[in-house]
Image (cartoon, rainbow, N blue to C red; front, side, top):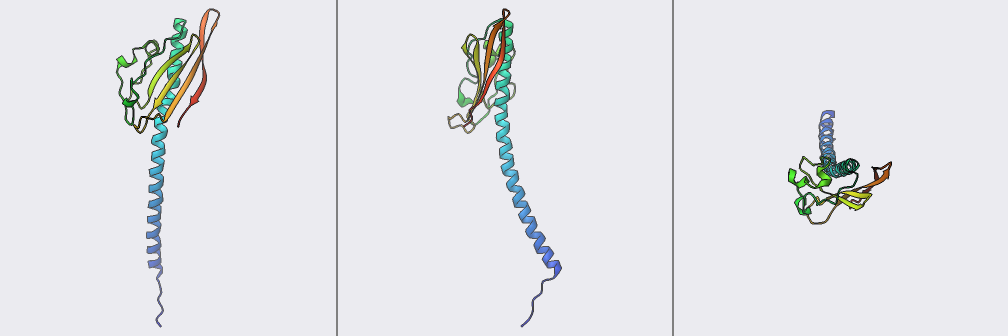
Length: 167
């Protein structure tokens, strides 16, 4: 019976090849899933940041004018315009007092629909909604409440509770 031996060189070559294949597979998996998560988080961050900014803009407007602006229309008008895609708004989209008073406008392509809703003389909600896959179902909603009080004859507004209503 003949004895078979494997040289150290062949063993290193085979072991190295297997290691490279395994390393490539693991790296590919992390890159794919990591990238997907990064994209999803960046899409969510758009709505979260802009809804806070909208509430602050409305607060500034209310303090300057002594009253909260009326409820705005949604931008874009129809949720399907951001359903599974982006929407590039125009200056005309942001003509409502809630947006124009303090210059609020989304200048980049947007994945969320935005609205200011006045709920009382002293409060309201800035809202951002998104349908990322275009199926007509809202997957993400952010709401920033705004609460105002009259003090020393002037309206003072502060952020209220922030709501993350993601599905």
